[in-house]
Each structure stands twice: as C-alpha cells, then as structure tokens.
Image 1 (tube, rainbow, N blue to C red):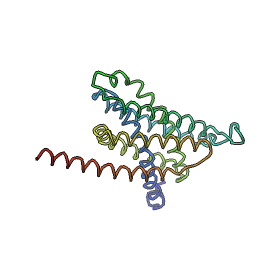
Image 2 (cartoon, one colour):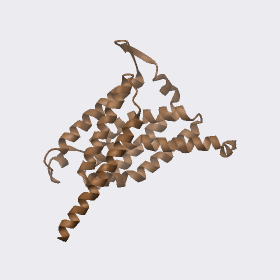
Image 3 (cartoon, rainbow, N blue to C red):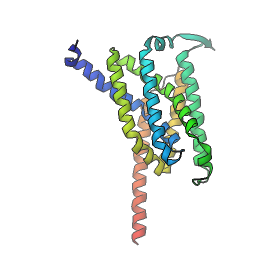
Image 4 (tube, one colour):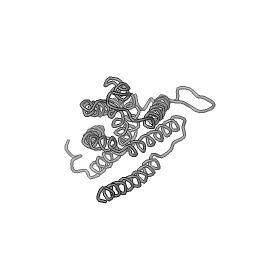
Length: 243
C-alpha cells in the first residue's frame, strides 16, 4: 500500500509537476493581482484568497473528472477543415476574454490617474472581480490539468502536486500583487504578458500550438530589464535629493 513512498520516480514526478504547476500559475497570479488591485485595499487580500481557492477547486474538480477532460479533446465540428473540440472552444473563449480584458486594462492604465473616489472606485465591484477570476480559472485550470495528466499516472500525486502548487501561489500572490501595484511600469509589463497569453490561448484553440516557454523567457528577460531600470531610477532620485 505504501510502496509508492520509496519509489523515487513518483517523487521526481511529484516535484517536477509542482514546479510546472507553479510556472503555469504565474499568469493566473498576475491576472488575479491586477483585478484585485482595482478593489478597495481592505478587499484585495480576500479577493486573492478566494480567487486562488476557486483555482484549486476547479483544478481538483477537473482532475476528478478525468474522463470528461479526455472527452473534451474529441472533435465537435470543423470550420474550414479545422476540427474544433470542447477544449478548443474553452481556450478560444478564454483567450478572447483575456485578450479583451487586458487591452481594456491597458487603456485604463494610460488614462489620467484616478483618485480613490474616482473611476477606480466605481469601475470594480467585489462580485464582478470574483466572477472574472473564476471564468479565467477554468481556462488556466484546464491547461494545468492537461499538463498533470500528461506527466504522471497516479491521481493522488496529481492532487497533492496541485494542492502544494496553489499553496505556494497563495503565499506568493500577496507580495507580487503589492509589488505590481507600487510600480506602474511593472503593471503595464504584466498586462502585456497577459495579452500574449491571450494570443497563445487563441492560437492553441485554433490548432496552432505555441510553447509558453518562449513567452515566459521573454517576460522574464523584460522583467529583469525593468527591475534594473527601477533600481537606476531609485538611485538617481536619491542622488538628486542628496544634492
């Protein structure tokens, strides 16, 4: 019964899957952070916790419904010779939603800064933010579960890896959200990243797979450059104050 405890392959698969789930959850954390940032400060932490809790529930529900997930890959109809499955439809709709939402947020960010009682306060309600998070959680969870199914065979290992990954994401989401909120340039970079993810989801739904690794590498490189810029600007500001 407990033979799996001494099986190194299971542990390797578990830790590898945890790492991949965390990486695949980066876009989810960024999306949740940006939406939560539109809420009053006292509601942001609760929105992040509920959002990631919804992500955990949707992932576990999909894992427990593996037979249904497998059927999602079966073609439903074809358009111009391209077969479309249930999974493709979910990716297409999710990609369009993420793309539209990100572009709208970029537009808002480029407008004049709103005060606490201005457009920001009127633009978002707690319920609408949670609904938007839950909609995208389904898309991100589908991607996550398909990865898990392709890596390991034991359902228990999949569930444990998903739970651990979401706990890590929950711990990291607070600092990430506050950092993004403090630096407008990082927020714009994060929105650009979400635009790219939306395009990748749409392309995947149309049968054109684009590895997210390229997107993550480009984003990581851009983030390092922007962090260096923030450091330089901080030093210049400190030098000017000293003069």
